[in-house]
Length: 503
Image (cartoon, rainbow, N blue to C red; front, side, top):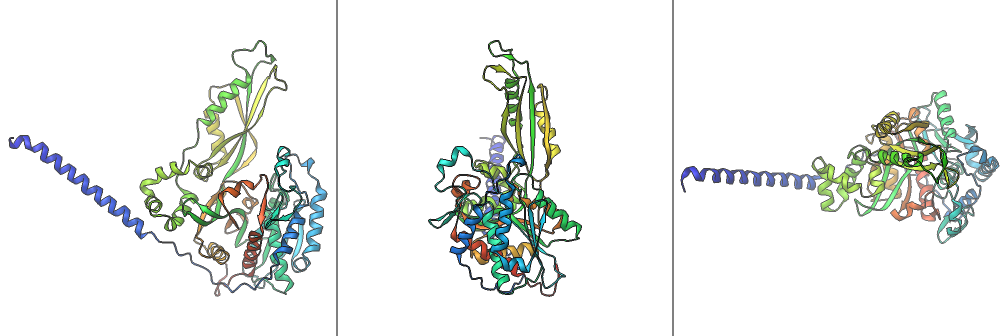
């Protein structure tokens, strides 16, 4: 073989050698990044030891059961709400927690919402706002036979308190009141002012929380931290293969669009080529076909990176090098509906309206589509994208209400987050803490304008399979979780030592 004929082979070998060398270098870098990944040290604000709370969890469970028996059900039509149930709950709280009510000033806000203000010893410190709502969603009539115990029975059985609101959110409300009562009864006064906000209509209109935020703004109050319901400690987190405490630092926005198609009314025996219903079906398909792309960023990415050091090696390998594997990670997460929801704006057709009778062609047919808006998008972007998806179809797209924009993202690089993470560490030692995105909604969204930081978390320890009980059949809270909540809120109320600094 001549030297000329050997030249392409030598070039090919050099290229192959270069590719192999580059692959070895890349692999070395990827493995090194994985091995270097260590748990982040969260700067913890120094805090005094929590005064020992004497928690009689059996008595607390009985009181939670009593709170559940007040049927404070929020309906879409407020005329269906039984206001007497809220008023009776308010009277019950005043009589059940006398020490807290003596130490803190309680006032009504926005109707039947409540706000307690417990003055702190140091007025230079910004207040701590703790939230939990009073209302609950109704149990579905068709599922009543599936409940082990009646949804408003408030029974304490088998180590659980059973009933609607046990988790969402009377469990947190009672735990807050229990902690406050235990501390106030011994003459304790918090270092910084503690404000408890309890909306009466979180599940529907949110007017109680909006009124509380407006009142705080009017009084010139700027909160150090707001904590509301939201995330929890997941016992079998898919990343850690064990427990992980997720603190939601933001929540998605919310809007519902009504899409209406028109057609010729008449008898179904002689239908036209397209009816309002068939046009509407094509519109739904077109809208769902324009799904938002998955984005591996924001609180979801930050949370996974915080959990990565606690993950098995191969999971840690991909998470440590998400600059390269971000798309693959997003695709893997999207296999789970909750995982996918954390990565993009979601589209959920929920209600339909058409003909009042099976043999009548409707003149109009409508679908209501609920969107949960990811940070970085907006209500107007949802409206524009939906209208673009149905362009050319004879349908109208309109907003149902004003909608809500995604909340701002609270920083994890603050004393407030550090203090919250430290409190989680006290009641769940050894459990990694990570930020997350709340894919549902809470009353805390109204507090973003009057607070430095807004977080969403309660220290309930749940297996993934338990999450379906929230708003579902057999909602319940374990006595262990109830006690953990009481101690956690007590820990937060005690306050932190800012080492001479004010916040």
